[in-house]
Image (cartoon, rainbow, N blue to C red; front, side, top):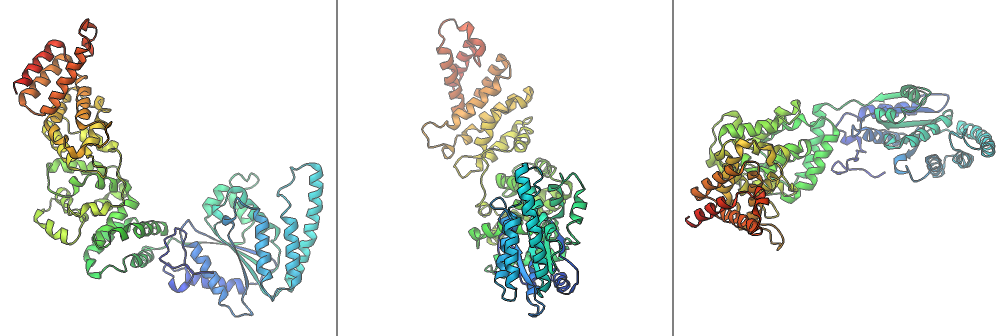
Length: 582
């Protein structure tokens, strides 16, 4: 059996060598192996160890096998490893079980030839008998009855031969909980069929809760009783304590960061990040595997370009709190750089995001955010923020450096649109033109990998959300859009496709959609105000051109169409005259 090293990234990786035990399983495995070899019993015996997925039960099974193999020759049992999950859905599990038993016994010179032959014969017969078979046709049922009788006779012969066999046979079975319901029942029937085979021990490891759910349709008896009829002795694998989990995590992290200079890891800062944030989420082996797997893939891409402590913290957020990770990725201006919005506005944004989390996660996440981003410590903790430290953060490759920040997200897929919560946060600012305007400018600074900006995404989505804006706030929103349109019309935000819509079209459509929610007189007065202020001239000219084009198409009988126009003919004429004077 090949040894699985601790740095394997597979979620199913398990240890083989008890010397590498980090969870305290080795001692139990040693004494269980001792018991299997020394206990006396009149017939076959089934032992089960229950544990949740990634609790270390496969590692425990490997340790037991290791200790069994270390026994002196006269005590060493014959070990038959069987993993039914690898065979599920492909071949008859009963047949494959007996094939595996026969193959292992055939390789053991100490096993009498008669036993190998009897097992092969028994396997051939019992594998052809569907269990249960009471519902088959009469002719087939009669045939199967004959086979069943033959199987019973062969079974007695196998039992007699096993009595003469001095070495114990230990069948180890893993991953039962991964099987389909019918496969689980078929496997359990094998245990029943071979229950009284002397010198035969089954050692099973599986998640009891999962197996019980899958066999819950067993009408005759409860799931608990069903298992008790098959399993003689069971043990519950305890959940590893925090110290053991921490030791396991650090051992695995050492393999990932082995080439990273020690001086890059500030122990005090790492202690704060781990104990105040990460440890809260490292509650089982599964969590460790998920984090280690992620870092195994993401760290090599940015090695020597990021601060190791910050990177582990950011990737922990990716694994354990993807919602906050995504918010950080999509809103760099909130987390790094200068404080452009008011403290109250930033605090409201952050509190809105944190409010989405589970109560038990709120404080650890807040701790991590403040440790990673001094700007947030200033906002939430009212501490002093020295923006001159940006150079120091840059030298330390910290995520809070505006220049370094993007490197941390190289293996992050950009969202194609803003989340609903982000849209609601932005719309919450519409009552104040200045606040809304400043936020749009910040969004315009945020470039996405495809060349567009967050502002463009927001305006495209705003067109479908205009009804969510109270009518009395629409003038403020329209003014803000005109006001920042020149920043939003940056050529860097344009697509190279000849059929793609430019920002001018997108902004104009959004403004038109907003204007249609207020009456014609209010539209006219609002457009007059915007023109008078002389802001957003490209958009103003675009709007006038569209209005003229609309009305020129209906040179006669305009009365039937005026209600569909943003402004009537007379108002359009006045607006046009105003633009020529600017």
